[in-house]
Length: 598
View 1: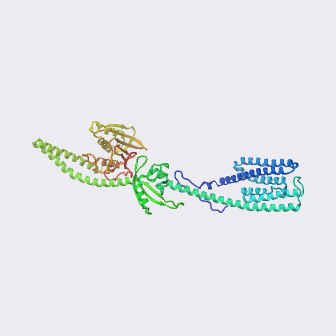
View 2: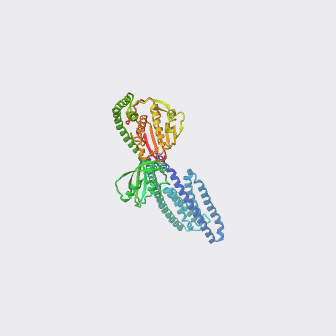
View 3: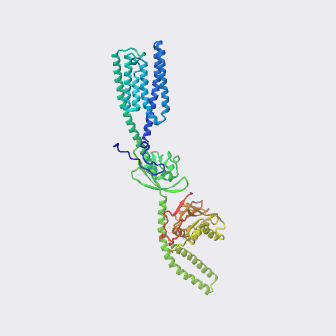
């Protein structure tokens, strides 16, 4: 059992495009080793073919220089030998694709090299052959493919074969071998053996070092690949957007979060100026270039995305150091803080509503009683006295203003008085149709066209009376926005993401962004004679239902109000919170205000 400490697997990153477990170099090292061996065997085979081709040329010259009576006998052996090597190389090339035969092929190749070289030396003069140097290549090939052990075994094998040739030559057992003295043959053998042994030692050591170096290099490359994948996975997994910008202000890298926030891709971001990708950063970026500092200052700005939606972006700059070329670069880290800003505004709005609600409750009770007494006194005076016509008109004005003040106080009380939710499972389309009937003869809608899209089955668990008031307020506001020219009012219900939806859209003049943020504030109105409580009451009713409300509007493009009711509130009976929320807690982004087209 090996005592080496096993390499730990790479960390797991759960993200799109992420990796799990160890990198490929550790998982499939056997396959990589086999591929490396196949490459070395292929190299040896190519060198062998090249050498045989060169030997063929030398043999042709050799035969041309020798007497004609010796050429015919030797040529046949030479060509048979060369043809054998060529054929074996072709067979090797075909069998190399079968990985399980790789090791047997390597050993067969080493044996064939030793035999071919020995036959070549035998047929060209033995100790006097000009090809004795080719033994070196046989040993080199074995060392390259079989490392130290293979190199030593190949060296012993070729020395043994060369020794057999020397014995045959001394004993004159082969006719093609020239006569040689024993002492001369022995000297030739020892010189050749010494050279072969030296080559075996050097080649095997170099092969072992090369193998260790390749293994270390593979591990380093694998570590680097693993580190790069981890680095890329971390950048992909960051929830914040990240850009790298060079000294010329050109974007060089964009992570996935940045692409999602800005709605851009590599083509529309990488290689382009930062201020073209995110124009909202113009002011802070200019100051960063003029006065670079290590202090991490945070900025916020409105950014218009490519899809037309305006978002709030919070961002900061940081110098990027450590590059090899010492090129000044900057990291830009940013987030979409639109939801945070909305939450902050919702909290501030709730606080204002709470304060106004308390004030409204007290004021309504203090004013309504004297107002009722005043109206009763006017009625008594009108019925008991003969009052001239001019005075009658003045008293009529008093009564009308008193009634208007009473309606305002009624709205105060509706805004501030808790009321139990009477939740029932109702069809939203039926509620809408019931409200629209009341607008059929209303002068407000005479010049406007009402389009309805009210499919059956869009049901929600709501307080029907309160939701009717919500629909009334939304339709009335839309009609007033389109008056007096008129326009098209589209009202629809639907199921989206398993949630019942109510959507009211008008073709009025729209609302400016600075006004849009205040539409839920009590007493804020842009209409003459309006109380400014309609949407505030709508806000409170929907807040009690835990509904989500979104307003999308731009000047000249009309306004769309979308209400998302919760799927099931059955069984709940809570107070309607007016300005506060002691009952059902809505999500933090229940009330959204959006500018720009979406």
